[in-house]
Length: 178
Image 1 (cartoon, rainbow, N blue to C red):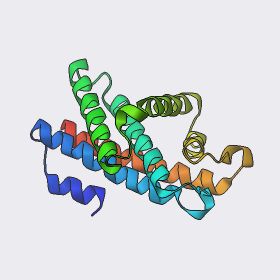
Image 2 (cartoon, rainbow, N blue to C red):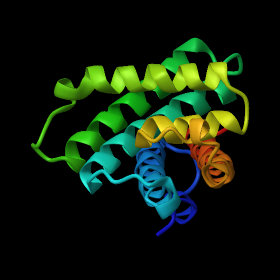
Image 3 (tube, rainbow, N blue to C red):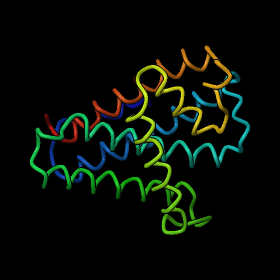
C-alpha cells in the first residue's frame, strides 16, 4: 500500500490520534521510499540495510520537520506548531524503536539523530535547488556526489527528494486539516 492510499484510508481530519496516525504513516512510508531510492546502483550506497533504514528514518523525520516549518510557520499559533512537532518527534521515536526492536534505544542514538538533523538543516539553508538535494543524498550515503560532478545523482535526487517532501507536506496537511 502506498502513502496516498494509506492516507486516504485514514480519512479526513479527526482526533489527535488520527493526526498522529497520518504522521506515523508518512514517516514510515517516506523512509521506505528513501531506502529504495537511495539503494539504486548509481548512488553506490553499500551499507547494510539496517544502516540504510536508520539513516532514511532520520531523513524522513527531517522532511517532516522541514515541511511543518515551511508550510505552517506564521500560519498556525506556536502552541499548535509545538503540538505537531511533538507528534512528529514522538512518532519518529516510536518508529525508530519499533523498527530496531531492542537492538538500540532512541536514548542511545539521540545525539546522532540531532547532529544529522542539524546538518540537514544547514544543507538546506546554505544551498539552493537542485544542489541541496544532491548534497542531502551525499550526506546520507557518505558518497561525495557534488565533488564527482555526478549528474545522475543530481538529476535523480533533485526529482525524488522534493517529491517525497511534497508527500510529507500532503500528509501534514491532512493531519493539520488545512
